[in-house]
Picture 1 (cartoon, rainbow, N blue to C red):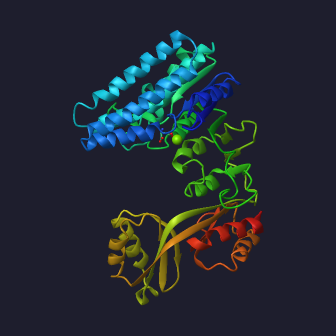
Picture 2: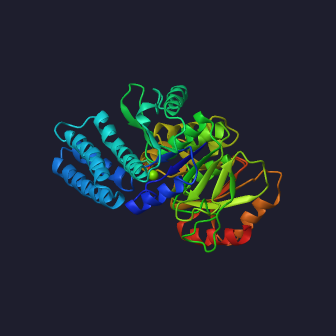
Picture 3: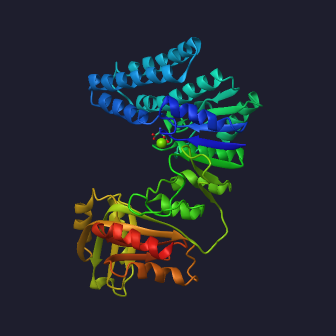
Length: 436
Ligand code: ASP
Ligand code: MG
């Protein structure tokens, strides 16, 4: 058995849903996790925002547009009058439920229920379409098995028991469809696994069922070795270690969030990134690969701020870094890169909303300076420190680019440098040329 997850754009229109249906029917007995159709969760978030602000007409307008969209999708997706009527009746109930939230001030529980509707609709539409095609498809309601505990973590025991039971009830189906993202919380209320959480759903299901493989289908042919927007001739990376994928995830490099991959990693289940638009392409396989001594990819993250704290008091002192780090903790700001010397420490952050207050507090400990509009460029691969040549090649490629910080040795998997925004593209190209 495999788990196949399709993101919002993959099911973003009637045509795309039909295409996904063809893909998932190529093999029998798999579990298919669907996101909401693209744009839907955003619209639902918007509706909730309007309701929180007491702007019911605003919510109504967004909801009406969504309703029209789904009426069109049903028309284009389904052919028989009966099936169209069936789908319309289900969707009508969904929209009636959504409208029921317009009558009273919105609560957090209400918001969660609103946000859950996107996945509930996309899976119903797929189920209707498969049914019309004569496929024995079974809908596994995520709200009947997916559950988080008080600490927000998935309740793996509960999920496993419930999911096995549901599968036993409908053993031998051609295909099983389920909702990504949505779940119940410890109180039994409707909840979700946070934005983009459908990948997490796939990883959790894969882990509890100990499947052969988890496939994440999107619109790109796997993870590329550099950013195709800036660098020509980038290539998909054929395989990545889970740790390498985790390093790259921070860079928003169209890849799974590290916490989403965790269940797969812990249960040693390979995750394959595939492209719905090019289903035959090999994509990228993420697994607990043996070290291969290879560089895999280069990625960049924009809008980074570097903060330097220089102090004579740091020399031979202990506890200095603790105080600096505590300042960031007090302002709930996470630190990305760090570089230290005997008399100073540089730290990078990507959320500068508390910058002024942080700088103010840091002034107790030393002289503080700030560089904005910086970019982290990260080279990811099997960078075991005994392998000598890679760090030299990285620095060599950047020979004519001013580098503000360097970080290497934090893990076996990355070398990061901080450069100015205006040097980013040049740096990405130079690294690709040198390393690949
Ligand atoms: N529909 C949800 C979102 O847009 C979950 C997902 O797509 O993974 O965040
Ligand atoms: Mg998504």
